[in-house]
Image 1 (cartoon, rainbow, N blue to C red):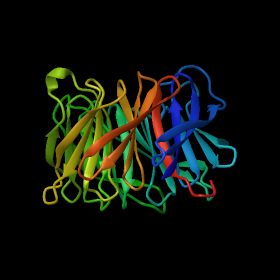
Image 2: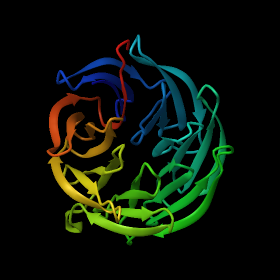
Image 3: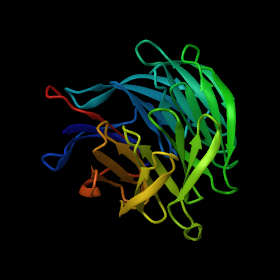
Image 4: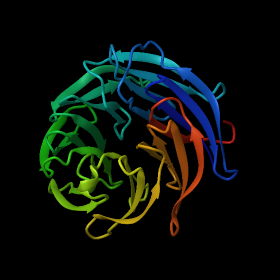
Length: 329
């Protein structure tokens, strides 16, 4: 399978496009461009994708969400618009209907309406999340937002017509654990939350807005620093990074309790911050924020994760997206 990868680099403020061919065991850079219209330093930059649209949240001076269209012939991102936002988003996602962007920043969560062409055109709603709001994502009309400093995850109903978020529940996590990123099960019944400083993944039951269970990745004594978490398309597997130990964990989700169990772990590039899992669930990419590099893994049903190849990124790679390439691409 051939895939197009898109990596955003924080310190070099640029975007790199790659072609990945798992059958041939090759990855090559096919395009590189600066992030347009930005200046100064930025914190780690999140991205999101819907179809041929790519969204990037600039977190430096003059924070904004930039919209691009993928040009497969020239292997570049054509800038389609810039939408100023009140503060820099540390997380960005597209709603499951493709009509809105959800951003997390400071103590708030933002819903941003997209035009028919997929360009951000207005803020639909702003909700309170809690200090260090670190993630806001939605599936099936249910959204979750994590507050890393207040140790809570809020649950919302999401209106696909208006973009309004209505709080329906709140789950408290252990003090100091720092809920960070969230992976929602394909059926929406559960949400799996990677903690930044707790060293564990917590599973939330959607119907009761309660913590159904946890699985520990690393001991608290190591000074954990969770990175990213993704769920497989069939909802049976989870993958998460831990930055302090430089590990990538694979987990199997229990069919009855929905609580994951660790099935394996492998090394990752230094300070693994971001993950991308292919739509087929058979290829996983991990970015090493301090290594300035990425690693490609094959995902097997029995053998787990197998490192296939490394590749060079720009300076401080912070986000990675991907899409399957068709024969004509």
